[in-house]
Amino acid sequence: MLDRALITGRTTGVVGGSDVSYLNESSSSSIVIGTGYGATRFRGAGFGSPTINNTNDNNRIILNVGGIRFETYKTTLRKIPATRLSKLTDALANYDPVLNEYFFDRHPGVFAQILNYYRTGKLHYPTNVCGPLFEEELEFWGLDANQVEPCCWMTYTCHRDTQQTLAILDTLDIDAASLTEEEMSKKFGYEEQFRKGKLTRWQRLKPKIWLLFDEPYSSNAAKFD
Image: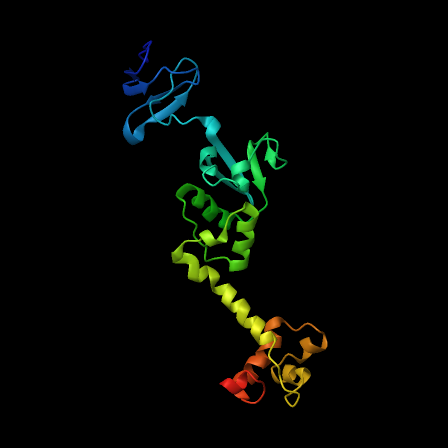
């Protein structure tokens, strides 16, 4: 039969041969049976709050992002003020009172890094997404892209260099004596896409890049080679 003890304040008793440690502090009661990794926590009327895991449950918050549930503390989200996550209230339309969670139809993989930013103060770039997508997510959550850590900065910003290069290539002045766009499309196997008006940006730029390096007089830019 289980031994019983009426305790005031912190004490240790025995339940079924196991050590019990608890503190009589509030009506939100619980008991810990066992010690070390084998300890088990139970809740029930008449027991005090445990001496471990004594975090206020009202401070915990659940965020459902793209179907993935994340759990953290409200105080963690207040570490970066004037952001979307720092201003969450129960009155928001995306709060579900039944599930007690906030739902955001956003990229969960990126959000994992964003939540870690609130926890650690360091913003890292996930290499499994493109830079523009990461920028879009940061903008939604109200975060500054310039806060990306130095270790991730080069990888994160390489898309900007690529976009600048493509913009320059788009403006290259191909001489009239060169092949027409239709002829170039045929040369590179894009004839069908050209007729349908469905050339991709790369398909339009590839002939220009070829002319830049293969035909030294095709444009002013090529003459500097």
